[in-house]
Image 1 (spheres, rainbow, N blue to C red):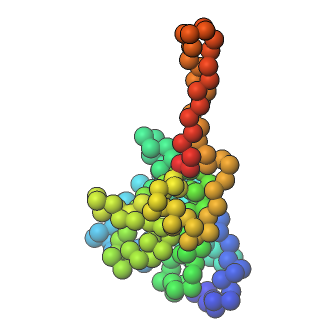
Image 2 (image 1 turned 90 degrees about the vertical axis):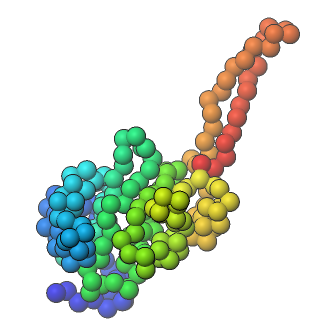
Image 3 (image 1 turned 180 degrees about the vertical axis):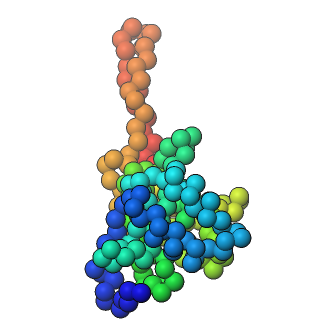
Length: 193
């Protein structure tokens, strides 16, 4: 096993997962999740339907020490679903999971989307809440990039800045001014998504 000190964690690389990484993902998955609750077939399904640019691995040289599998459903194009996030048990508590999550949050925020997940353990709820996730009535956790009052507080706490890309505007609508038969322009702006 590779051994790291906390100072070595700055040298780790976050990379997109490739098909060659499946065996290492499977190894960490089996060590992190109970087989009777999360069978290996579930991992395979998530792997097959993952979003490659958003499914990431943490690497120390050629050794993977953590991963996140994410997907997007066709019905909800901008909603990312984190199927699994796991770190090798030897590397927990070093801030590595936080680095992975921060990268996903930043990307989601810049693209105006949201992230949905079901934490495996209740002990992780506070960890997700630190990243601006909140528990919904249906017991899943969600992070939104739109500027609701609750989310604006989380965005500010995370140091996220609104960008010009995040302002969504409706297309220009022309309506007819029947008093003088000239078209008028009507614009609506929805602010931050």
